Image (cartoon, rainbow, N blue to C red; front, side, top):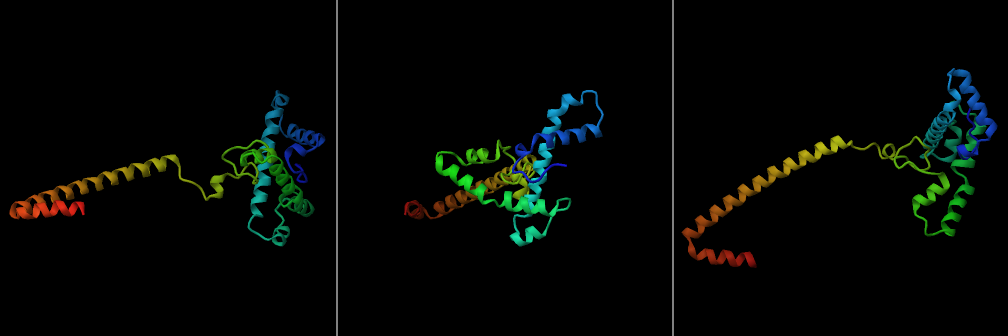
Amino acid sequence: MCPLRVHSWMDIEEHKIEHMWAVVTEKFDCDNMNDQRDNVLQHMRKLWNNWRGSLHKNMKSNSLHEVLKDVSIGVDKSDWEWLVKEDFLSDKFKAEIQELVQSEPSLTNIEVVERCFGPQCKSHAVGFGGGITTKELKGGSTSKAVLLEELKITRKEKESLQKRIDILESKYDRLESIVVRQHPHLHHIHHWSVFL
């Protein structure tokens, strides 16, 4: 239902958007359905980006030959070839990025990305569509609650170690005072050795 042979959702022709909306309105009957059109299409756009992102993710670690051979389920072979060659690996797209960077060298990386891909959601990974997050690419991340618990444990360990150090220093001071009382001439030698 949603076309694949476009570089972005914005490139989908209006009559195809209208067709997608007609399919939705056929499936769902609601009194204020037309009032929800923008929200529904925005959600469809997100789902479409997620789907394309997952297709792009699948091809990341394979050779071009393997990628072209491994057509994703539900995708026409010719659409898949177009998507891989004309979008995911497009020299034209790479050239556009390079031209932008050369023509406006003061742009930050995120500004370049946003000019090429549109506004970015900070948690999502650029180039993987709307559904792949940086957390997923990194193999997940620790939740805030877990990090706080680890910090709490680390602080307790630090306190315990500090108490042990304090006890050892106290024992050392007692030993030193015993030695100094028994051998007063060593007191001067010890203090000099601290400075050496």
